[in-house]
Image (cartoon, rainbow, N blue to C red):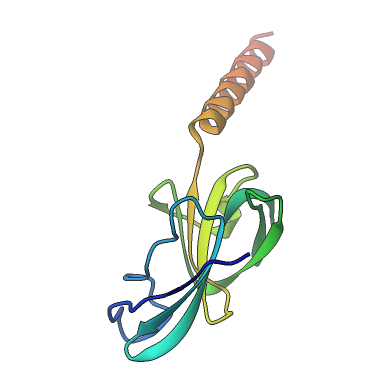
Length: 140
């Protein structure tokens, strides 16, 4: 079930696709539909949050907290950040936490990816193991 909220967003720039002043996703939600007014025009924002289960060339899929899988389309104007740094769809990895917002049914306007600490620690251990194996193999 989608959360439907009416709000007024401040003007975000010349285009509705600007993500500067979009309202944040409601805390604790994994899916939300919010109607807002941007520069005097009504828009519908759709938010999704979940674990990344697949990454393609123009979309990715998340599994939301209720078990629903949602495929998110990514376009050339989509702004992606990964742990606070500019990123790309190709840099997204399975099991990362992604939150996105789309405007009026279009592709994602903004995708914010967070690498959970436990996942980052696992990747660091795997990288260290691979480095040890490479050194061991190279010294023989």
